[in-house]
Length: 466
Image (cartoon, rainbow, N blue to C red; front, side, top):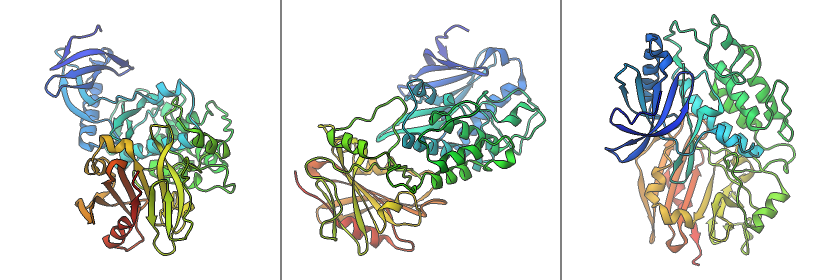
């Protein structure tokens, strides 16, 4: 098939990729003046009515789920020759396959990314849908206002478990496909996707092959990946939620505190820039994975961030990081951090800190209350507080109406989420800190507490004028 000029009302710009079941084109939507991805059923399957209907089913399924962790379908159509096509939101960050071609990421970044992939697959599993083909090529990245998001794409021959069809074509990619997928009579269920998650984890951590060696990977994490890739489905985790929970437990505080430190996921092939202080801190210790709530906020301990080093409160009542100070609730402590992935004009991490009764456990233990407080000049230049809070929807949670809290001349935009797993309650808040930028706080309040506890914490956040 040559490059078509148009597919329906969309002007075709170039080929993005081709697989055994479909071809994907980069297109332009003239009505919205935006780029889209157009997935067209491959010509060699156009005669098979079952495959054509399965292709449409996938588009309908994604449209029905309409989840930010999954590829989103804008429209469907049919070519003059009868082949169906689906118009999807463009994942402008490319695929995990592209990034792995440049090398594997550090351990904490790999684990953070694997957690995000598992979260996307868990959305499918809660709907009793099996992906069947979890590979680096089907893990995409899409830009957001504050970074990027992992998106699970190309369900291929995914299907609702309750609606099995007669299609017995081999569904899956060798190396990531569960053994039972080679048997047309075997039951393929959510544990088959767990196998794919385990193999993705091995690939991210540099241990592909039949007998992977995971040098530098914590033993509990290696044990999780071994169980996920057991040959017998019954020996694996039952679904992506169970796998993700086990991964988080395994990536928690190790016996040796210098083994890992919290680190925000850096996409493979991309180096994390750092000033001299950041580089020194990186040499002093590795990074420990810290996952926070439904949005998996991940922090990096920076040790020192420049002339005014982030540090625990000297007087026992205030926590400080650069110009940011937080009045500590009784019994709470502060650990100074830099905001992972956020750098100022001089290449230094922007200021941030964690406050909690137990800052070391707060990153991984959902029962521990606490808060992350960060100040970003770069975010302040391109986002308002209301926009920034709106961009953190925690799609698995139930949101209360956004409210505004005034403390003197400061107005906080506050959103509260009730979540079915992990942190039971998450609060996102942001305000403008004058010329210093955008001030952001994520709070996990004590169990049973009301909004007054959050409001009191926000009232105790200060930014020293430049």
